[in-house]
Length: 366
Image (cartoon, rainbow, N blue to C red; front, side):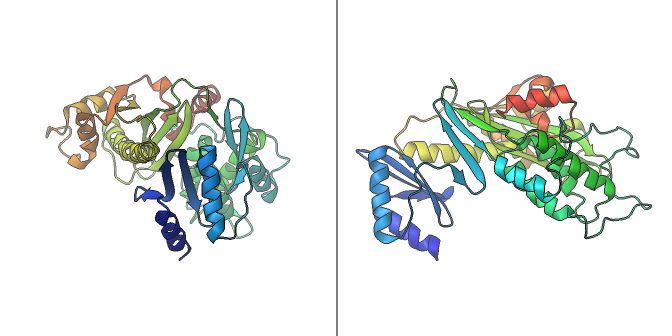
């Protein structure tokens, strides 16, 4: 009801929105533009000063509202403005989480998880064994997973893989898994102030670049691989995902095709949102050229470039996963090969040693 009332009121005044992002309202006039981003009854306004003032006055005529000035805190996210950019972090929330689970004075660690063993019997992240007990209700496993997921999805992509891995055992967690949770918390203990910095001085601040990767048999216990992707703008992450694949990949090439498919879908949505906002605000378009999507598997890139071919090695792969090929033909994306060591999406598909982990964390703008 509230959204319908607000939407009707804004649309009546000439604001527009699009199904691709229904909670974003935009108005363009001769004096500039205003963007209203709505989350329930919280609103963030972006635009030119004159048009912003008109928007505030218009909203106040209908609704009782409080103008808090420049956004500094929103939905648990802290926003710090500086002369050369914006830092988005959750240090206060992180400190509350650490205190809540009794880890506020723990010894900090440099990575969110240990490097996993190739021996499945020694893997600390293996499922519950027959000789192991599920932790009791005194261990707040589900609460910890929920708190960490919010961090991973908002400002801490560096813990996405470890939290996704530990969340799989929510129905039957053991002491090993709880130790994994505490490992993540100890990592956060040493990186409380870490956040995403969006620079206003970046040379490519208006274009997005994607990275896709797959961790083949990342879950050897279930025979599943891991999909990971990240999109950056101006060198800082704006969208990312780490998730277990639902299909059994028969090869590393197969798993990479599945990961590239998921990244392509996200890329289409990002391009649509950016195009809608920039075109409505009469800003120069950044979607006239293909979006670069980096991938490190040569065989996967060759197959995506050639399209679906019913050969002995690929006939079992559903044609829908070659959607990326169609996007390349329509010049919406361009898949480019990079070295594995330069693929930022590695951060979302596997446990990494300290030096590699820190390099990739820095690469996504943290």
